[in-house]
Length: 310
Image 1 (cartoon, one colour):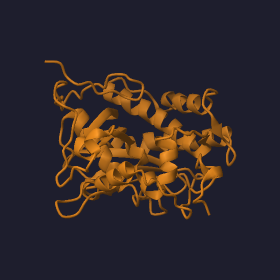
Image 2 (spheres, helix red, strand yellow):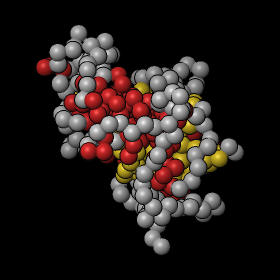
Image 3 (cartoon, helix red, strand yellow):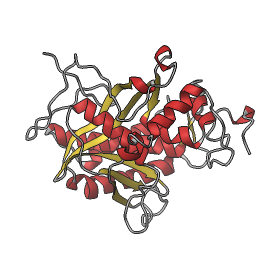
Image 4 (cartoon, one colour):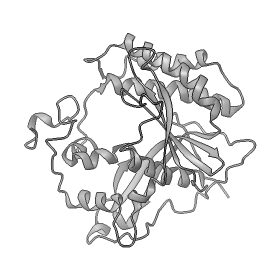
C-alpha cells in the first residue's frame, strides 16, 4: 500500500534514518484530527475550512485585523531585513543538517553558500531600511558557523524541514499547515526543534527565549506527528540564534517548552486556543489592536486604512 511522502521546503523527499526507521502513515488514511473537547460550531459545516499556518497563530491573537489582511485578504508587503536573514539561516543550516542525515556530510563553509545565495536573491522583495545585505550576511555567516559547531553536533535529527500540507480539524472548521524545522530523537522520545533568529532570541545566560512560542510549537508537534506517523513526546525545543551586531551578542542556545499542545488543545472543561481561533475566524470579527508592538506601516499591510491604529 502506498505511503504518505514527507518533504522539505524544496519539495524533495526526506530520507529515513538508517538506525531508527520512521513508520509512515497510509496515504488512504484521512488527514484529519479530532480534538478532545472540541465543539462543533453552528454553521461551520456549510463553511469553507479556513487554513492557518502554524507561524501565524500568534499574530491572529495579537491583532486579528492584521492577520485577516495577510492571510484572508492576501494583502502583501516586502519582507523585513530581519525576516530575510532568518530565511537565509534556515536555508544554510537546513542544508548542513540534511547532508548529515543523508550520510553525505558537508562542511559548514560549504553549506554557508546557501545563506549567501538567499540573502543576495534579487527575486525577493526585501525592505532593508533598518539593515543592509552586507551586514545581514556577516551576522548570518557567524550564526551559521556557531550553529554547525555548537548546536548541530549535539542533536540527533530524524527529519529536516518536515512539511505537512494540510491537517484538517473538521469540528472547528480549520486546517493547519506548516513546516516543522527539525524532528529529533531524545531519551524522552521524539521531539521537535524550531530555529528562531532575532535580536532577543537568546538571553545573556545562553538560554533561548521561549516565552510566547508555545502555541506555534504546539501546532508544529501536531503537524510532525501527522506527517511522520510517530508520537511526539519529548519537550519542544527552541534553537535560538541571536542576531547581534558584535561577536559577543551573536549567541546561540537552546530552550525547552513542556507540553506546548496543552494550551492549544484545551480540555473538556476549558477550550484551547484552537477553539478560540475557530470562533474568532468563523465569526468574522477581525478587530484591531492599536497597542500591538507591530501596529506600524512596516509590519501591517492595512495600516494606512485601519480604523483601529493608534
